[in-house]
Amino acid sequence: MCEIIEKYKAEGRAEGRIEGLLKMAVSLWKKGKLTEQEAADEAGISLEEFKKAATSGIVV
Image 1 (cartoon, rainbow, N blue to C red):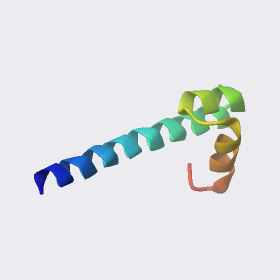
Image 2: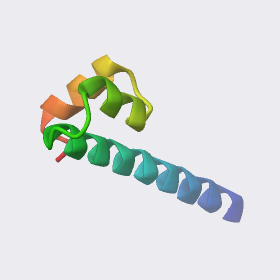
Image 3: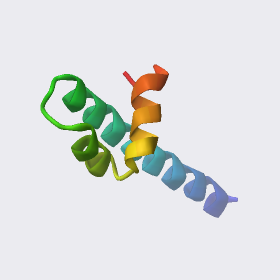
Image 4: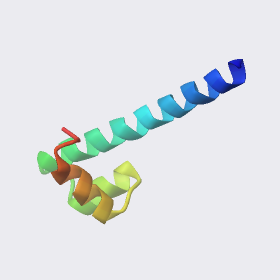
C-alpha cells in the first residue's frame, strides 16, 4: 500500500514540475522575453503543444 502512495506522490510532483515549467515559459513568451520556439524548448514540449497550451487559457 505504501509503495502505491509513494508512486502517486512522485507522479504528482513530476506533473507539478512540468506544469510549473510550462507556466514560466508561457509567462516569458507573453512578456516578449522568449520566442514561441524558445518557450516550447524550455517547457520541453513541441512548438505545436506549446501553442495549444498558451492559447487554451488553461495556463496563465
